[in-house]
Amino acid sequence: MTLIQVFDPPMCCSTGVCGPSVDPELARFAADLDWLAGKGVAVERFNLAQQPGAFAENTAVREALEGEGNDCLPLLLVDGQIVSRSLYPDRETLMRLSGFTGGVESAPATAGGCCAPSSVDPQRGCCS
Image 1 (cartoon, rainbow, N blue to C red):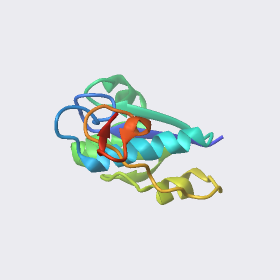
Image 2: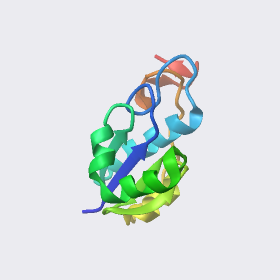
Image 3: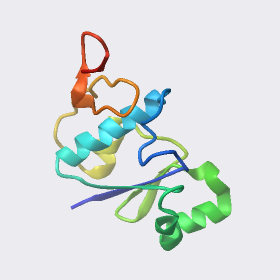
Image 4: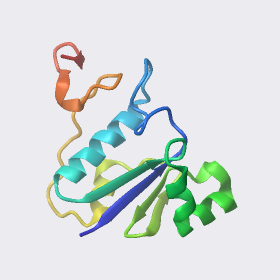
């Protein structure tokens, strides 16, 4: 099974999808990772502010940080190899990198804050 690991820059919570003003890119990426995990792809996510040990223990990540600093984050690894740096790939790219061969569904609408995509009320555009 393919393993996707995401090494995020320092954020206030594990996904960055919290607080009063959520970056829509982070919300989209979190939903895309959840979708991929729901399709059976193994996904691990690490936040530099909360799990610095994971960054220090991974040789590829440690070397990228030593050479480029935090500008290389987020790093996306597939089976231990860096395949993306400095950006959050879209769902189609994640699917391709993971080797998932099923169809791509569009990402669900998300509201700000920490609500899950499944609790978004499409009429109001916020948590139900």
